[in-house]
Amino acid sequence: MKIKILVSGVLTFLVCCTFFYCSVDTDLFSFSNFIKEEDRLCKPDTRVYIPGFPINRFEKQVVEYEKSNKPEKLKNRILFYGSSTMVFWNPTLVQNFDGLPVLGHGFGGSTFPEMTYYASRLVLKYEPKILVIYCENDLFNTPAKSTKQVNDDVCEFITRINKSLPNTKIVYLAMKHSIGRDFGWEKMNEINLYVKNMSNTNNTLTYIDLNSELMNKQGVPDSSNFTNDYVHLNTNAYAKWSAKLKPILSNLYNQ
Image (tube, rainbow, N blue to C red; front, side, top):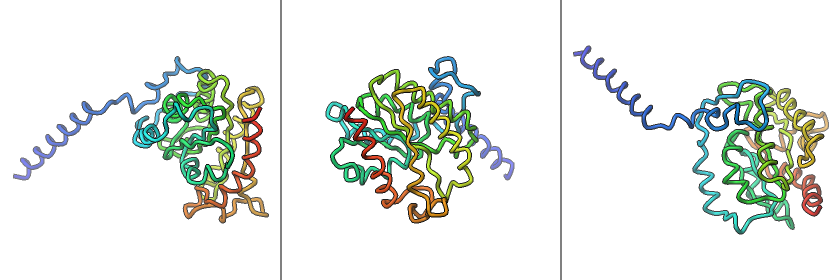
């Protein structure tokens, strides 16, 4: 009896596995199928990163933006695009940047390849005058991703935006030094410096580091600027960032 139950269980497992394999688009589980190495505009220095999650995992959030934000009515704006730091900015975005035509398209815990994947739907159709980007999650997923692989994906994203929207100005907000991710700050700063150097030779790219707004007198991240997870910013910190960023964006927009 026990043997029959065991055999039955194994057969059920195999059938389920077969069904899952056949019913799931396995192409979604590889960035190499999204942008193959030979098709990249920004040739990678290292082996292309393969993630442990599907490229379309934030589809639901993207569809919601498409339903509520019609591109024919929202072109030529300042578009905030990226990960959850942008998502949590959304509620106060219009208030923080009063007088500027801002629009928020942040989604989940996104990474740069996912930002590239969804750019055709959340960026290109809107033809923003300025694209403000923020993302720090690439280093904190499984499997591990090297700083060079992150740099490759940042370069790919910026290069593709430049090609599709040559008149759009890109503002890169430096990865923030938070208490919760202090262990990864050295690597995050490597990527920041990579983009800063890129901005020296790319006249559409502006690098802005707002970390000074988050530090205390001792030069370390101030807990009063973060939510309870000590990774995400609170409204106090967003107000500081906005005050610093608004005149820069205003100047870029009016050029």
